[in-house]
Image (cartoon, rainbow, N blue to C red):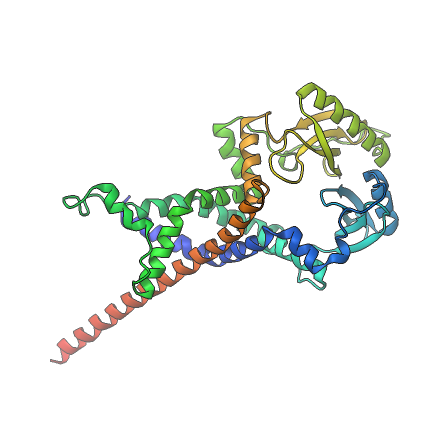
Length: 405
């Protein structure tokens, strides 16, 4: 394939992605500081750690069931100090809910607020969840997630195409200088050039200097939104076990068996986690979440452990048969499968969950750069198109002049 083909491909893939990457770039820039912005906008639902004995997940889930009897309660997320985020869904025979999450005080069990993901925010507390939904799925649910997954895959491929196009064409200036000398201008921005030249240099040089980071964010976006593609590609190279969310796995209820109550399932999860920690040589640092995966017939007991990667959250979990309490499996972010360890690093880098505040600042700036790369790309296309149209109009005018003569 000729260089002209890759120029054409880069141009039209870039134009297709531009609006989407501007949205995810700018929203991602904000999400690097999600906790701080969330607390600033809605301090009433983010009290932070405070004195008192914190309630266990089962008690909080029972409390949520009493507060929202019209909903099915599914999960307690405990990653934020002082509060529990409770996930809910509509009952099979119930009406649609006006919310899909409750925020409870970890100490008192008091309800602090209710949230609805997606849709335009109607309260200050809903602004950052809306930004998150916009970033992850264009605030459009599954359809938006698929769109961004395809954009992420195109972006990953375009990273390599764009890099190739920065390389000097074979033979260009060969007699005058070496290959590296001919490549050097691609890394520089000539601030004294024309506005078009500055845009072109910013587009090319920024893409080069930040190429590795852009590729990490593009490919990790495929992981989030196009899981099947990511799983197949990673499994070709590394030993990889997809997350329980992505597995085609379901436990049907045995005859006469109901779901284990929250309290019993929690106790079993804690016991199994301690057993797995001893057997696999890791230490449990904090309980992070407790889920009931109704569609799979599983309880998930999740902690932060010494196998986790990153500054926050937790991804070490045991899976428990939701009807019998039997051990189903253990997932660790690192030290279990090579592909999973790499994936954990990709996720942590994408979520700005490693290397502390300096990296979070870098990710926030990178989001703006991603938007800038899309904007400068559109401007470069528009200027070139304008020039082509002008040349074509001039040629047409000269042809008519020749006929008239």
